[in-house]
Length: 360
Length: 95
Image: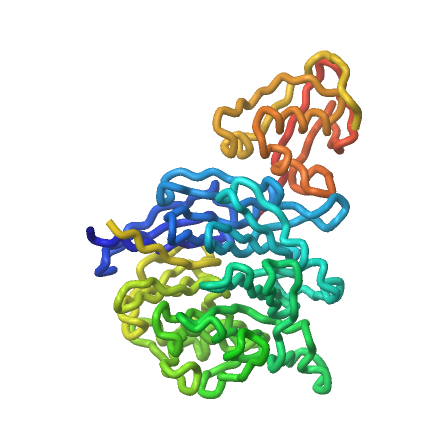
């Protein structure tokens, strides 16, 4: 059966889906879903096809929405998605990840929750907020958010999370104990003698290389990095990029040396594509060199950015790459970034982009 | 907040945006409660999850939810008069 390709969008005004066949030439858009709640992250469980949408609404608070019919109908739950009475209440869900029958949700203020019943109910992974550094975590521009959840493909007890601006943390025992993994990532916003602390880094996006669980990449507020030891040490790979600042990082689904970035012009320079010319930057050698892929992307008067969860790849061959802008345009490439076209415009600000390929 | 003896019902009027989140929910709900917390607990029994939409985990009424009892903004502790009306409304918010 011919595969159906879905791009899942979280936006400031609800979730959307786009669907195409494997050629990825023509797309149909549906939405907005989830009652137009701001949806920070919309993801699919590749094993089941269930779509989860994490977000929060100014009136009704945080929830994870769920669709088991590819977006046609939705339910929501926040059962258990709460801190103890008296603690600062959860404002919204920022990230969702599915692995090995578990669903994880990262929230603001930063914490991690887990569901073993497909999003019906949630329990806190309490070890993270019990970490001795937690009282000193400081919020980034978007608040104190847990935005990246990286699971281990073989070991369900291992997890990495990215928190702005607390840094990367890792657990090897299913979340009971955590260790900071920020060695080598810098904080340009601290005095020079204090730029490499144990924690407090402003990680923007954390991803794992395909087939190499020890290789992680992170786009940071202050540079781009690669680790070959599960985040215990990080090495800068920003040489050759137009900027050390950006939000998303997208790993190739099969090639551990290929990564896609979309650097912006700088943290206090407007946070749009450098010189108003859009490009996705690709490495084929794990960050040793970079090439700008511009064909089809606007090369004048482009003043948009792409947020931390708003770029993704599908698993087809060649790989499709998708970048959603904070001005509501979705760009797509069906050939690993060589040529780009706009496949949706005039949407609300795009907060997340993910993909789902359904066989038949 | 108090435990609930048998009391005369109050009429609760729910906002449309809330009703859409709970299939089968009515705009006008008659229930027995002596204060706002009891009222929300009763709503949550009928439509599980509704308390989370109206209250945060402090717990307190969500910042952009207004609950009016006898024309005044209420808290979870506000007493309800037997036979009275309660209006739950979405406040000005968004962006």
